[in-house]
Length: 195
Image (cartoon, rainbow, N blue to C red; front, side):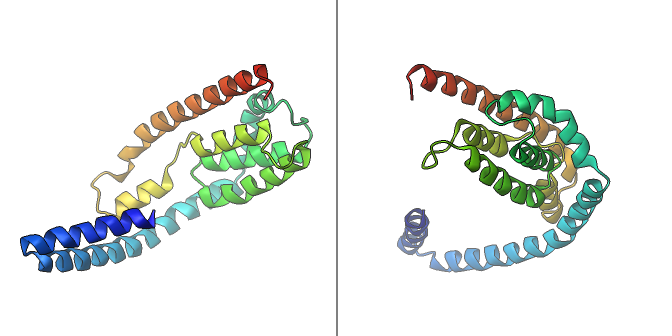
């Protein structure tokens, strides 16, 4: 990745030098750095607001409610995990936090879920089916409140920063459906091959 960025950087400088516009590269770099600082500072307030709202929702038990609703579905997705095993609880909490846009709260639950699933894994050097399914769900989980994106749009001066909510719900819903379907199809395929 660093090589790609170096290629773009040196390529841009080289083309600018060939055209006699090296000063434009310097001006563009300084302007971009200034804009990055402005966006970062603007994000502090917006992120504090959204994280505060999400924290209140978490303390009010909204995550627990989502977890209770999702539990019957997840038991079918993870048949290798016993219904009373702690791994299922960590998975529920992780996905519930992701649904509510609580990425920072979801990460610790995700790590605990992986650790608990590793205890059930019969072939420890390789990820189990449950771990693969969880990874697919975690990375494609439906998001109802994209707090981070809204914060970035607020910091960038968007006139309607929340207009991203509808498309985000639709896109993450499609993404999660595709991920779960691909996981089930690939699982069946490799089981038939004995892998």
